[in-house]
Image (cartoon, rainbow, N blue to C red; front, side, top):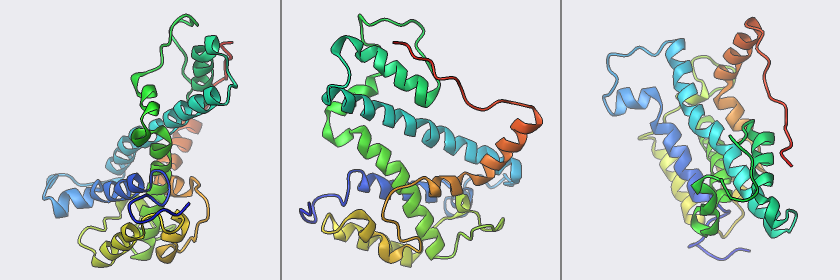
Amino acid sequence: MRVGLNQEACPGFGNAMAEAVILSVSTPEHLQQQLNLLKEYDYDDEMNLNFLYKMGIHALLSIPSYFVHEKLWTDILDKKVQADKINCHYWNLMAKYMGVGPSAMTNQTYDMPYKFYEGLVADVRSTKKLLGEFLGYQIYRDICLEIGQYQRGSKDKPLFKCDFANNQYTGQILRNMMNSGSTKPWYEVINDMSSTHPTKLNASALLEYYEPLAAWLAQNNESKKITVGWQHIEFC
């Protein structure tokens, strides 16, 4: 429902715009050229991979956590899990989507992390954070394509190095997106500046951002014969 300028185009749209800006100001170029930091560092391939690894620790570990928390709330509200099985169901989800389990299983107490309870507060729902992560990378990717700072397949202009600080055209794009409020669906809000013209969320922008790290990990795992993934254990 379109309700006006004081609401978001979708849950987490404001988070997504903030995420896009964070990705821009986190780049090595921004730290060096805009903030005059890290002057003594030369970002070679190893440093770039370390940078992507550091960024990935935040995003790629948070996303499944947000999903598990919101999935648990949904299953409880839909009465798909009995009250005495909530804790067990939670750890089933954690084992399936994150590959981790409890130190000891019990259905007598709840041992979910404190962030699980944020789901009770609408402003910090995991849904908003989950959508904000995916859409944030998407907005960032499309802006960087639009201003020419990212070129697919180019080692000179990879996505993770795009910094749109002081770019007036980008500022106008962000201003127009904020001015729309929830008068249009999110995909219409970003459609004018997007060469991808999305109609649904997907992980393509995330995959493009972390492509250099993913390629290195695949090669490293193969050379060391490391098996990727885990067995899904059912706790109840």
